[in-house]
Image (tube, rainbow, N blue to C red; front, top):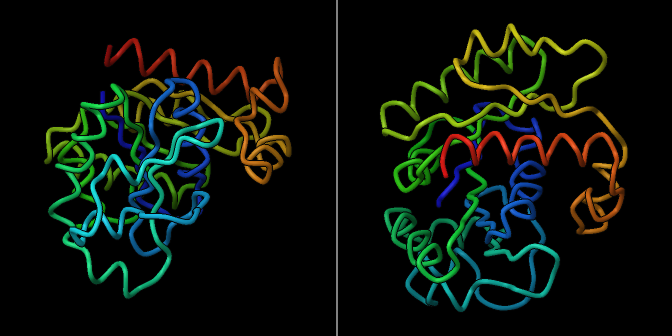
Length: 220
């Protein structure tokens, strides 16, 4: 399974959702945001090296942590040196070796954002309750449809009381799971841990488990 985590707007929490679903599915999380990498980096080869032909995808996978990660470099020079058309092949190689891959896609509708969708079996759209973010999510859904990447679920992130779940479901045409705006999610990210490890039994941990079940019901 290759699952793309996408969202038209930056800053809606795509990387957090990707990390949490990586933990839920025991998957490798690929940070494919070539210019604005947001997941933890480490010493050694990264996705920039893979796309530039300097490293094999499997040697760039870091297994030292609660979630396996293929990180991305954080320099513009590294981003420019890579051939983004190699991304789909690299992700499929990781899938062949590990079985499940979650790809943290770039924001927006550029070619970089579309490449992970070409390889994906399904997409989770991440948005927030504000109207402008929903409009961006609709544009990303249209791109996913163009590339034959089915929409498995919507993560309605950073919600308060009475989230507009039904309105978002009608607009995007997929099951919606509301993720609460909870400081434990941010604390877990800062610690490099899934929220279920930091705060087992908490509301956000339960919601990410629900999101994973929803995706599994659509894809597996």
